[in-house]
Length: 276
Length: 258
Image (cartoon, rainbow over all chains, first blue to last red; front, side, top):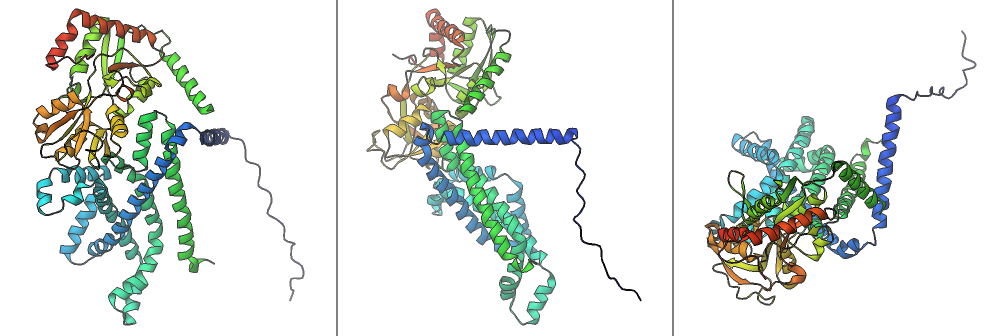
């Protein structure tokens, strides 16, 4: 009986053969270089304009607008999240009387542009002033801020309901059955067992929805609200300086990038038991 | 700054390519808004009508050039002129210092003042900053009137709209308390069915610093020859009586102003 006395000494993997400089590879490098140069120019331009009269004059306004944008986004996201739970439940319900209206609601708000919904609510409400005054709701619809929050909440709740429903359906039936076998009540199973697992799946789509809302909130500026875009348009209309829009883009990027980083942390935390 | 130079250089090259055969101005493209009755507006079937349009046609006839209208949103009017989408703006644009930094203007072709309109049952009594304290005041954005409101009525709450159509809807529904615009524009609207909701609160004294020195034709700075042609034509139609004819067709008073 022979036994292994000596094995081959471990060696590093052989070096990869050098890749040929094909036409596409050269084109890729050239394009990449152009992008990098363009990006560097943009950064240089912004840096050299930090003390320009434009920035001196308008930066305070931009900050105010940025705060308004964040307020709009987070208030409507919060309200939309609360509203999305009953809608998602109704949507997954076995009772047709609950399921179909929820389906119609989601169908309408996902299928039509946010701009159209905003106009419909804002100018639509304006033409029903007498009726709204009768039911004492005019104070609400008179204010552009409330109209925007209302429109955005309805819109985002439809999206969030779909995210939630998809995520909940993704959790296997066995989890429900296990919960029932332990004698837990339906709400406890949902909130303590199903929802945490569903959130793992829902996290990324939720992040996307928030990003879409941050950018979509620019619509508020055309119904007289001075959000980030509203202030940008005002600054542009006084200066005709295109850097107005570049600075707006910078602010939106900051918001989205911050969110992206928070989301990476959240995901790492929620899925820590899956790490090996 | 470098990018600015680069952009300017690119624009120059593009302009040079565009005008390689030297502009002879046999054809002039005119930008207008089409949302500012009675000066310029679109009819239901998409035709441009109004005082500005008639003046433009008369000027083109006087200059013996062929004119083509381009409809452009108000907010983007000056950038579009600079980008070469059209050669002249005839859209009731007031000649102001701010705009003169970006474009050139011909002499004025009319001059009217701002005014404030309110719903008929309005509690507002005057057109001072004191009287308008806390009132929601609507205006079209990027206009001299919105600047006027910002400067003269800081106590009012200014709401900006993309076109007059939107502030008209909002003042009719009572969402805002008052609107500021050209006195002629407001009077014309108040005479129509849509304007039945409202009345003129009062005319305002124009401030030349804000309101400028009347409405002129905006031209790119490098097109001095076109500006000269337009100036001669404006004098021409005033001398020939054509201006008065157009004036009387639209208004029962003289809009040329002092």
